[in-house]
Length: 328
Image (cartoon, rainbow, N blue to C red; front, side, top):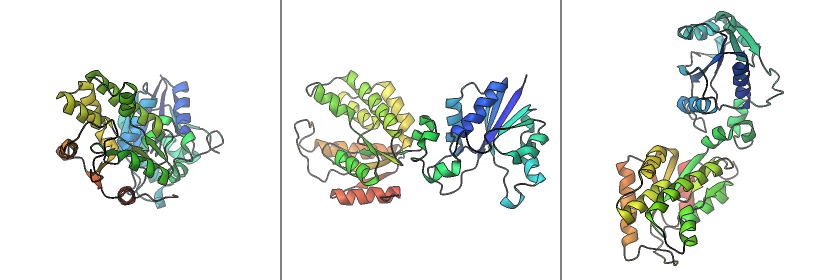
């Protein structure tokens, strides 16, 4: 049985890395991928090791092993010396013997020899896949075609704009997206509500939450750095609890699984409640709903940004929280 090995930081996992894994899978009976847990402070987009290993797992579910290990790197000075290769080779002894090691760097010959593997050097000149992790990190949007949509979309920071009725969420989402040259996600629930003649049922709410998330996933493939979400499945959950006192378990599960994906922005209800013909919360109920939402975010331990005042002040507040500027 022939065993293959691919190693890397995969920041991010791009088509060049896919080339290595594809060759390994074609030539070997089982393949191990090592993901080195190295995440420079302050790097953007955030790419913790768990996320990077998740990319590999999702794209290659048949791999024998996907292992996250600390990076033995110590300094640039010894990066080409024998001790450098030995540290990496010794770290992998528990995984057993490998027959082939796949990389695009001839300088890894010493490492391959130390683990007793044939070194298969692929696309050394970067002609098949003309890209590098450094280039992608400098401008992920420019190089998005060099990554799987799954990888690229997970580099986009989603921003959840939440709050009660008539609190300016749609206006803020649209304005922020225009300012930063990116995408924003419209509210599926409102469209469904209007299409059904301002009527709905309990069964609609899981459909709304699921479709809203699917819209986000599709839009993230075309967004640049940020994706502004006019609402989220979490908001739909609150509507279900308000209207029916309960919610579909799948909606609960979706919310629990995705709350960590967002920067949360609570739009304050200081615009004054406006009845546009579709509103349901008159007579102070909108404000009570607002307080319930904020209480739930605190209960869940989710930090959030408060956007209040005129639109320009809200835009400035959110952009400052994101560390975003126009034209970058």
